[in-house]
Structures are given as C-alpha cells and as structure tokens.
Image (cartoon, each protein chain N blue to C red):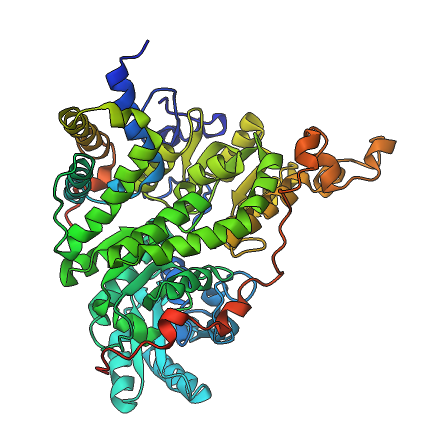
Length: 116
Length: 522
C-alpha cells in the first residue's frame, strides 16, 4: 500500500499537471519564477497567511493561487484535517516536486535558451 | 516511459527519439520526445513552412488589413475555404488576397520595383483600407529584396498608410512554428507602442493567441464584454491593426494558444510589465476557471460567476447527452501544436472519451510536456509524424475517431476512421459553453454516422445484410444504453442555432454601454 503522505502529494501534483498551464512557461528561469510565485501564494492561502497582491505580477500569481487553493480544498477533504504546519510542509514538497518535474528534471532542451 | 520506434521508420532510426508511450506511474522526467527540429530527410512529414506560420496562421486573421505576399502567387494559396478565421467586417481578410506575382525574370533582375507598384496598386484598389502587412517568401529573401526599405518609401509618399513587414521566408525555421516566433517578435519590435488606443473601461485585456476560428474569438469576447472588460486587442483573430499597435496599454494579457503567441506575451511582460495569464477556452470546467481567474484579477468575479451559472444551466444537459454516448470511445488527438493540451484532459473528463494518442506536427517539447501531463497512462505521444507512422498507429490503436488536419484527415478516411478537423473545425465555433456542445455533437456525428460503416462495404463482393440497409446515428449510439439514459427527461441533444456567432455582433452590453470614456489619448 502506498504511503498516505506520498499519495496526498501525488494527488496534488496530478491535479496541477492536468488542470493548470502556468508551470509550463518556456524557459527554466521563468518556470522557477512561476512555481515560486504561485505555489508560495497557494500555501499562504491554505494556511490563512497574508498574501501580497500589490503589483500586477503578484496579483496574477495570486489569481492562479486562489484557483488552486479553492480546488484543493474542494477536491481533497483530507486537507481540512491537517494542521497549518502539515499543510505548509506538504506544499513545500509540492513545490520541490514541481521544480523537479518542470525544471531540474525536465528533458525539455529549450529551457536553457537565453532568449524568448 | 518507453520510447517508440515505428516499424515503418526502422530505416530512419532517429525517429525513435520522437515518440513515447506514457507509462503507468511514470512522469515527464522519464522520457520526452524531441521536438521543434528540422524534419529528418526521408520522412515525409505534415508540416507547413515558416512563411505559412507567420502569414496564414497569425498575420492574416487581422481583419482590416491588406495582406500581401512578396513572392509567387502560389504562396497565397491558403485563402477561402482553407482557412476559417472569420471576422465581423464581412471577412475582408479572407475574401481578398494579394501577391506580387514574382516570376523568374524578377528573381534575376530583382523585384523591389514590382513590390512598390503592387503596394500602391493595392492601396488604390481599396482606398478605405490604410493598413498593410507584407510577407517575405523564399525566392525574394534569397535574392535579398529589401522590403523594409520599399515600405518606408511608400509610407513617406503616402503618409496616411501604415505597413508592417514580416521577414519570415519559408526556410526560416523547421516548421510553421518558426514563423509564429518571427511575426510575434517582429510585431512587438515594429508596431507595439506606436499608437495610443482609446481606453473605455477600468478592466482592459489583450486577448492573445486566439484566431477566431469559426467565431471562437467573438464567443469569448461576448463573455468578456458581459463582464465589462474591454478587449483592447486580439492577437490576431478578428483583430484590428491599430488596436494591436496599442497592446502596451492593457492591464492583463490573456493567453490562449501559447504555442503561437507566448512570445509576444513574454515580451509584453518584460518590456511593459503586463502580466500573462494562460487560459483554456475549451471545456466547461477549464473555461469556468478561466473566466473566474480573469474576474478575480479585476475584482469582478461575481460577474464571471453569473455568466458561468447562466451558461452551465443552459448547456450542461446537452453536453451530458453526448457524454453518455461517447463514453469509452477511443480518440487520436492529432492536432498541430496546442490543442493536444487544450483538449486532452477536457474531452476525457467532460465527454468521457479515451485519448489513446496525442501528436503534434510543429509543437515544441513544451507542448509535449503539457500534452503528456494531461493524458492518461498508455497514450502514445508522437512528434512530427509521417503518414506511414500515422497509419501504423491507427492499426495499433484502432481509434473510433481522429481529431486532426485536413491532410491526414483525408487519408484516414480511406482506412475507415472518421476525422474531425481540429484546426478549422467542422461545425464550430468550439470555444465557449455552447461551442463545447457543438464539438461534442460533431464528435458524435463523426463516430456514429452510418456512412462510415456503409463506406467500408465493397458492394461488388460484400453481402449487404438486411440489418445494415437502414441505419441512423441514434440506432447505433443508443443500442447499448440503458432505458434511463435513452428516455431521460433532462438530457437532450444540441438545440442551438446553425449560426451561433452572427447574433453576438448586435448585442448590447450593460456594463460597457453606459461607461464613460476614461481616456481619449489618440
């Protein structure tokens, strides 16, 4: 039987990969920025922490984060049983995994092209 | 995620790097097909050239423009009946096509004079049209014709006109995608920031990577206007030349087809600080979340929700009628560049079909990442396939229907597999809530058309059984459905109009109608 913690991580990753597009920008530095911007804000929303939205860029990240946090909460009821610390740790794992899938472990040869 | 070398391509072993089968429990770090590379000699692929990608995909959907090819007349081929990017100005850009008609003598002696004469002649023939785009082609690029210089001369002599020059000859990239890139960068370098548009709302977007195929842009624009959002420009379907020069004034870039237009969004973000929001206009769930996100960005999410509620109530029962009849049907999703990821998950979830293969003719590895991520385990992903590989895949996968372009669409018919036009659509638009139902209806009609079964009979030798003499779609689709589904009082077939777009052009929009002009800086 699969580790329940890993199962939760897999569910969140699968949701992002099937329903979101922001993680697939065309350059590695861009993907890092997207993952950081959106997943940090998603974690803040899930943990009831303040979220910065005062620049257009932050606002745009926040929009994707709100959608993701709402989707996670509505689809995965087990989230409501977790403490803030546990959610924060899980979201850090989500971020690490997304960085691996889309940047560090990505086989996309275009990611290091210096220009758009 | 094992790589897959087709038997027919064993003599081209490099092709083994261009196809993978998505394995259970595997992810994108295990394998990814190569992409956006020159087609391997010996494999006859289905790509277009970089000129085609610049002009016929991205440039020409602009509606109020004389689009001129500087080259042989044959390069203007893709016009009426091959492209379906309509517009609300009586399809000027589709009805008229212009070429300088370069001949051998011009290749020898130069064609700049010919070009200048053609530009002036075209402006005189259409005096109400003051904007022009000119596209370089292979021959005129090789002889070094300086189109920019000619365009500058004409603009000096005719100050009321404006001309954009696109330097993307056919050989300027491995596929049409090279042309997408060049026209994106050409437009932002030459034209964005040269016109100050009129801003009429607090909420202003550029709608980017949308080509108004059979009215897609007009459907989405209707939603945006119902929310009170000004669509400052559309890049480029149903888009206006001068509006697109004013892209720098938008608050948000809403990006649909990232494959063809992410470059200009990225540059607008870098140069002007306008954020990029990627959306999906296909599928109830994806479209709803897209509208919600745009509403949220501007603080008008209640307006987005009102549209979602209204449209879902109107159309969901019709989508579900088709879903019941499409469940489990096998689909090869073989479009050009972006629809493999726009559609893969949405058609599986909302129409119940199984995507057994995705391919892309000109996509990059990023498109494959998205496509593979969005389809289920077991799917065969192919980059830049040739005809023999496609036929071998058909024998292997035995799909019920294929979504692809008209070239592969024709040859798959010969092996008895129905196809839907993924580029230009059959009975679109396919975007929007109603559009998604129209797509489901087209899939249903393709799969269950008795014609496909009858076409496979050879009347010179096959026996025509009594049971096969008269068939209808419903006789075929409802044969194995439960009585509850067949007689459902709620589910129903599509009830929209034949033309779902023209009516949108006369609509009044309460949030837009009484809005005072905020700036008038023209």
